[in-house]
Length: 289
Image (cartoon, rainbow, N blue to C red):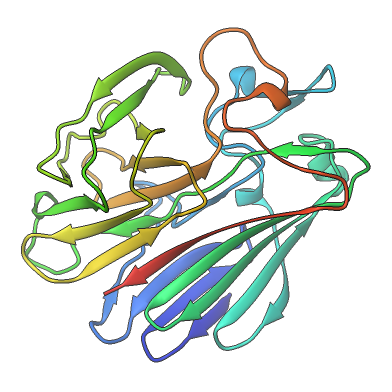
């Protein structure tokens, strides 16, 4: 376990998946990350790579061949090496191997960089192309924030506040976890999405056309907030297991497949790419107040 700390925050990251396991706000004494109760949902903040969401038939189609791939990819189950570490900064690295090539036939290095800056934690994804061809991929985050923040409050005291006024339209997922082609208007109160225990009965809310690049989880009963800035991520998922005391704020560069014929990886929706010898970088920030 790696721990980063400054005057505001103490965060912990484990080697498996380079996954955040704690975001502790020292001033308030609040643990803001869901503590992965295995009887409810056994993750804290999985990192998603080289796919986001489910792929048709649990396969990737690359250069005419199919490769088995699980929902959200394999890195959340992979052991990362810590290549740099200071009191406020750590770099975790996963390099391609015979194991990864079974699922994703590219040579690459995938780095996750965590940096504390005051009350903010910056998370950076770096994809280094070590292959002799373009590497296609998706990448995203899945942090679960524990709510309520304070004892005596209810889940339904909380809401997600969008940076801008939004006409929220979610893209519906089928029971198999693929986009069905249907959309649904999501009711808001101004720029606020009220959290309810039944909001996620039909799986995640997936927003593809937001104006906002900042959202905050807030309560009507206190002044604490968790704010996520995601300037480089065009898609946002919001999810919780129905009735569970957390909410996931998920910046994505990529998404699940749509029902229908399987497409080659380079034609997948919102697919990213990095050229031979190049490096892809994208960051988001979690700020505690």
